[in-house]
Length: 328
Image (cartoon, rainbow, N blue to C red; front, side, top):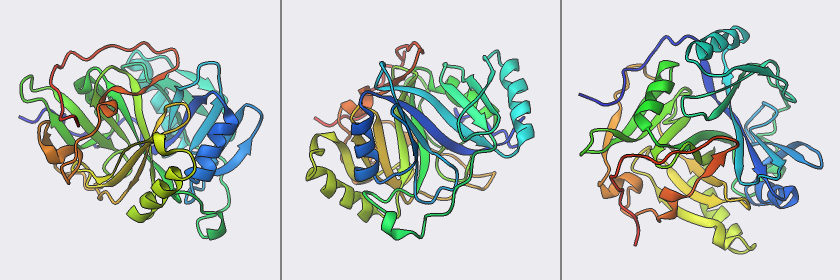
């Protein structure tokens, strides 16, 4: 028997994709430099305390909000887009029925926005309408850094991956790949999607909830090499954490870097299409040396331990004792 729940193909409301994340930072100028000059995101609005960014393919106003905070290195909220306005009302009923807090909040550049949280307390917001901007994907003079095209996914530490997967599965997220702990038969990690890629949201076993990373899609693996050369020669060599490589899970090419506040960012490309409703999830063994990296290189210990907390949300340690392969 597979430990992943059967997909709910007709959820109560229709989430089409992840949309944006709001990160708390210490020094907005330092963060702006990193995310624009190095990573290559495009500024859509800024004030003394807040910065809105989008990637080069995106028509919505923002995929990332950076806000100066006295609690830097924390995550404010993760955002998702629904198919239509009515989905927001259905989502409100759904989350209330699950016993989750709900509130209608005002967000700049967004229409009606529902703020709630998942079963672990991760703050989530859902909206349908966001201000639309002109297309810049063929304005090649604006491309910089890794040439990020779009936000691709979130990955979060969960102290109970089974519970997280069940919660998201119930409102339509579908598992594409997963890792099971042989001893306890519990899920150690899982990748779940709405938009037809390998994941919009993933969960990794560990002290949680915490954000493990937010990922951006780039055109080719060579853009990752370009970013490495840029970071290595502009004072950011110590911010390169893991990669480049190709994941076993997702088959994607990857690089992990840390921003000035310790938020982990993945640069990512070339996973596969998962839109079929009867797509069978792929199972991985935790001890398979090709799971993390197809070429066999193990991840550093920091990759399994370091994450950034959600503002005001307490964390718990996982009860699963199983350990992945860690680089010496």
